[in-house]
Length: 339
Image (tube, rainbow, N blue to C red; front, side, top):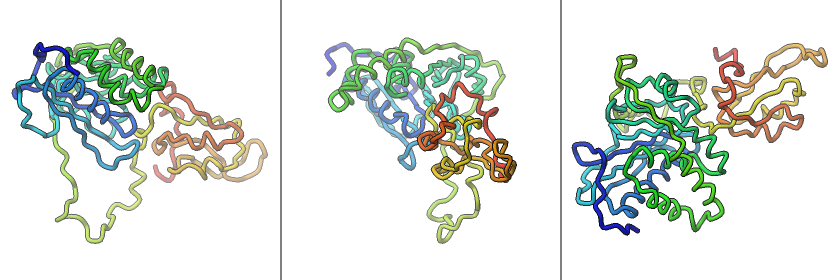
């Protein structure tokens, strides 16, 4: 696709000659595809050299995903295939990941620009991520994706292209069209709008390394069990470990909100919920005055935002709302027996 014979020079590169990007995400937000698009834009669209690959476990919605992109100049050979440890751009697709995964490890002040999908300001994002310093970009990718009927990855690609300083807009547009244009032609208008808004609306601010937070070096995960240390027969030593799970990283911006004034205690929500999010307690029904099991609320620690409960609730007591507009700590009701 590359029409230019001019050599594209990278604005910055590491000791091996690469500009490196690491994307921290969850299954369903399209980080793997975003990496493929950026790699294709650089190599085929701009005549550069490089590599793109992803790392993930079970391939399902909500599980952690890492995508890596290495770009180098055309005459540089690619002789490395390890994960990106100290990226020039670190793109975090879901802010809830910070509670479960060390996504900021290796973000180096003076080298790394962190892009966070959030409604927070750059200052709030710095404190939220506890970054030792450096450049931070923020973009409300979730809201833009909803407004354009696109995906979070399109918005993040636009932001990454803007901050990188070398991606050619025509090459990125071509790569997106090459990936989706023929198969999803009806979605291309929204994809291009999301791409453009990501490029234009990302806000960046630089923070000095002031000692407020410590730098976190990148460390490779070492499995707790291997073929030599795995328990015989797959025995589980931590019984009932679901009580420690936090499924908030599985949510993609929408949660169910309960209006108790409309609840009739039918229990359909509890029957359809796959993760036992609803909290019931024995008490007196304020409407009938009778003793019974009363629905108190939702324990959002276990809610992954599947919204099945909102579809089955006939009285309309459960409705889908934007998570960013709610105070989760205020509206969540904890299971007493798990405290």
